[in-house]
View 1 (spheres, helix red, strand yellow):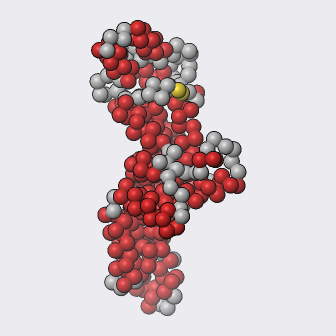
View 2 (cartoon, helix red, strand yellow):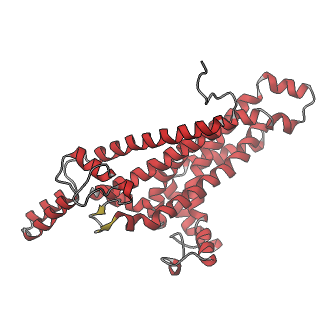
Length: 342
């Protein structure tokens, strides 16, 4: 019951934090001088196309860009009525992309779930690889197992994602006949979900998952190794060995659980780092994620598209942090999540 109350508390804290983050995202997006429509008006006037200026001015009024900044934010979120009443993010209206000339929801619709799918696969890859290698490196410290794990870790940290993507892009197709680019075969794009489409997506996920998750797995493995080595050197582990506790149990019972704390706490930091690191990889591999759209939106100052994508990434970060906090409270009874009792 106590953990449930804590989870509910963290959920509402997450919502409040997301509201603050949305304000920061919106105002930071508007810090550079001008916006997409202002730049377009200047371009039209410089080329003598004054007839198009009236249409752009209409768009400024239609999307409340002629209002004070604080009112623009409230209309964007949905807390203040705009030209068409209450219609903001909380109502499912993500705004209009001036660069693509279509609603933001149409641009990011399919890209959102593909982005979540790619990054969840990368997170799973990180933990599946980092957990056994980190534990083996700590238990077999200063042996060939430890040195091999360290070599893998250093290679993973030192190799740029885009370079690894290009290498696998070529050699994966040449020697293993892995598909090149995208997250599904072209014939499945826009088609309803089916077993063949799921299989195509899973095959296309192999290279992106490996590329995006390699650096995270390497860093996580080194961190787990260091934490577990620190725990294995403590007196209670030596006492357990002296009392005849089996070696595997003496590692898994308490040392690994304690060493797991930073491992679990990294969930909140892992998601945003993977998404930000996958932007360039998405461009190189031609993935249908939100990465290329975000890059285009930031370059053209398409504020509604860029703002929504940044808010989406922030939401994933907060969800990951909430999950890690709840898991930490379940994992380690020493963590006080009920507050100080008076």
